[in-house]
Structures are given as C-alpha cells and as structure tokens.
Image 1 (cartoon, rainbow, N blue to C red):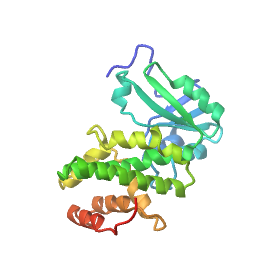
Image 2: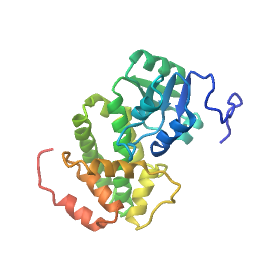
Image 3: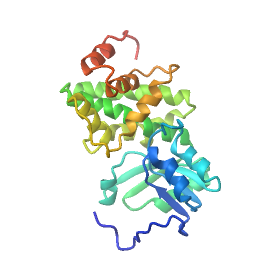
Amino acid sequence: MRFPDGVRVTDDPATEAPIALLAVPTQSLGAFLRDTRPTARYLVSCAKGIDRATGRFPTALIADAAPGAVPAQLTGPSFAVDIAAGLPTALTIACADDAVGETLQHALSTPALRLYRSTDVVGAELGGALKNVIAIAAGAVIGAGLGDSARAALIARGFAEMARVARAAGAREETLTGLSGLGDLILTCGSEKSRNFRFGVALAHGETLPEDVTVEGLHTARQIAADATLETPLADAVAALADGRVDLATVLETLLSRPLKPE
C-alpha cells in the first residue's frame, strides 16, 4: 500500500497539524503519549480497547497525558486496508464536545469515508472494546466447526451482553445499536481480516497467534471477567479459554447448560 503523494512521513510529533490521529494499540498508547508529548489541539484515538494497566479507555489516557488537548475517539466497522483502498466506509467520531466533534467530522470525512458524530464517548469506546471479545468467541465457534447458526446465536447473545455492560457504565443504548457497537460487531465476527476473530479460530485449534499480533479483545475479556458485579458469561468464557483454565468442550457445556429464560 503506497502513501498518497500529498502525505509526508515524519517522526516528529511536534508538528503544526491541529489534528493528530493516534493509530497506536491501546496497550502502548499511554507510553507513546508520555514519550512523544504530541502538541496537536485535537488528539483522536484510533485504538479500541481497555488499558490493562489502568483499566481506562484511550480518551482517558489522552486526557491524562495531554490535558491541554481535546480527546476524541474514532471507531466503528472498518479495516484499515479497506479505508486505504478508498472503499466505502462509515465510522463514528465521538467527542464530549459536540462542536469539536462536528469540526472533526467534517475534517476527516471524505467522499468514501462518512463519519457520524456522537457525544457518548463512553458508549463508543465500550462498543469498540467489547465487540472484540465477542469476535474471539465467534472465531472459536467457526474454528471448532460449530456452524453459522451457532455464530449467529453467539452474535445476538453477545450483543445483549455488550448492552448490559454498557448500561452499567452509563452509556446510551442508541450508541451500542449504531456503528461503534452493532456495526463493528457484525464486521469483526464475520471476517478473517479481524485479528480477534483469527485469535478465536486459533484457540479452537489449540494454537496461538504470533506475539507481535495485537489481540485487544483478550485484554478486554480479562478486565470484564474480573468484575464480579456484571453478568458476562461470554467474556468469562473467553478469558478462561484463552488463559488455559478450561477447554472448549467445557466452555460449550457451561454455556449451553445455563438456565432457560426469557429473551
């Protein structure tokens, strides 16, 4: 993939650009911000996940490291290769300040990339983080040969689990049903381009992905599973399976033997 002719590559974070897109994995974002001290007025995280060291989301890490900047979150159903190829894509730009969100929305939208804005930063970040957990589970379902019907059931129940966690965190329900929640969930649960989906397939085969492959959903599953106040059977199962505490057969037996209840 070639950079466009108008793009200049530099290793100097102290540029005069008013907007900086932080395309750094969540687990590396805090250290990156401390080391580089970006000076842009608007700092937009492109990472999805929860920092395992602090339990915080990307915009909170930005606010701590750069209190003079306005943090925002770019999230939703997309693969970088699709955006780079100019394929039609729609994303969410989330910022607590709606006026700033509108500025970023217009600055970053292109004829092929359509941005919708939201002030529900918590909901947007949660949707982007939680869908990775469900994508791992979906990959395990397909890797184990359990079929598309099982994957569809998993996605539906996974979304219900995402909604419970989001409500507990004070997120708005419409955020989870939008691009940053349901949209991203559909994409990552159905494509082998997703690292989290591929990790789930690897788990079902008793394998792992290379250490240099980022799997944010694993860290998120562990964070969510550690909270005993939430009913999160799928996150619990993903964390236990990935950590080797149970095998896939046990996970399936546990999930399928849960008490029957209204939907």
